[in-house]
Amino acid sequence: MPVSRRHFFLGTLALPAFAAKKAEPLRPGILLILVDELPAFMLGSYGNKQVRTPRLDRLAQTGIRFFNHFSCAPAPGPGRATLLTGRTPMQLGDSGNISPADVPLAKILGGAGYACQAGDSAAALQFLDQQSAGKPFFFTLNCASLRPPYNNVPQKYLDLYAKEPFDGYAPDLPSPNAQDGKEMLRDILGNVRKAAAALTALDADVGTVLDMLRQRQLLDTTLVVFTAACGGLWGRHGLWDSAQASEPPNMFDDAVKTPIIWSWIGHVPALAQRPDPVSAYDFVPTVCDLLSINLPQRNLCGRSYALQVTGKPLPKKTKWRLILCAHLLNTGMAREERYKLILRNDGKGPNELYDLSLDPGEKSNQFENQQYLTIHTELANELTSWRQKYST
Image (cartoon, rainbow, N blue to C red):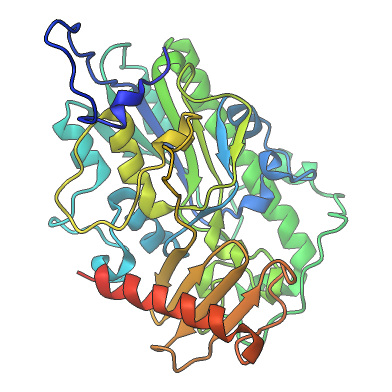
C-alpha cells in the first residue's frame, strides 16, 4: 500500500472523533549500501554504456534515481559522517569522525526499535539470514573502497576490461596540483580499466546481499538505498581521487556528484528518476520522515525529500531549494542548476566560478568575469550564510 500523505503532513487536518484508529507507522527493514569514491557517471543506470553494473542497474529499475545528488564533503570520511548524521562538516570538525555527542541514524533507528548493525558483505549475509518479516532492522553495508590500488580485484573482472577502449572517455593531462592518487595518472586508461573491474566486482558483491533479501523473503518489506560518500575524478581534470586529489581541494562535479538509488517495492515508484537537487545532509531527515520518526533536536540543515522519493508532488506553493552547499577544509561550494561557485580561504582564493550550462566540463573559470558579478554575489552570500548558521 502506498505511503499515506498524512505521514508527511501530520497535524494539518483534524480527524473526526469517530475516525478509524490511526495507522501504525511504517517500519520496513532498511539496507543502506554505501561506497567510497564512486562518481555517478560510472554507473550504467546513470548512462554509462561501458562499465558493467547489472545488479545495481536492476536495483535502479525497481526504484527511483536522483540525478542531482551531491556529497556535502567530497572525501570518504567526512562524506560518510554527514550522510549518517545530517550534520555539516563544520559541525563535525572536518575530521569525518562521529563523536559520542552526535546522533547518527543508527542511534535514531535503534531508539525506534530497530536492530542496527554495519559491516561488509559477509557480515550482511550473516545478519540478514537471522532477520524475519515484521522485525525492523537497519544494516549499513560498507562496500569495498574504489580507491586505488586495485590489488584485490579478481582476475575474471580484470579480464572483462582488458581490451575495453573506453571510447569517448577523454581524461585530461595530469594536473600540476595533483595530490592523492597522482601515481594513477601515469597510465590513466589502464587504471580506468582496473577501476571499472573493481566496480563490477562490487556490483556482484552487492548482488549476493540482495539475493539474501530475496531468499529470506524480505525484499518486499525492505527499503534499499544505494549511494556513495563522495565521487572521484578517475582521470578527469588530470586528477584521480576525490576532492583531495588536488591541492587545494577541488569541488568538481565528478568529485561531489554522487549516485543515490531508493528502492522499496510498493512505496517507491519503479523506473523513476528525479532532477531535484538533493544533498547527503538531506538523507537522515528523509529516512525519518518516511518512517514518521522525530528528528533529534539538533541544528540540522537538511530537508526531507520523502515526497519526491515516493513519487508524490510537493504541496502547492511549496518550492524546492535551488542551491546546495558543500565544504571541505579551506574550500566551500555553493551550486545551483546553472552556476557553481567555489571559495577558498574565506574568499581569499584561489576561487572559481563556472557557468555549467555553457561549460559542463568546468574548464573555463569565470570568477574574474564581471558579467557574472550578480550570480557571484548571490552564491557567495548563500555559502557564507550556510557556514555561519550550520557551524555549531
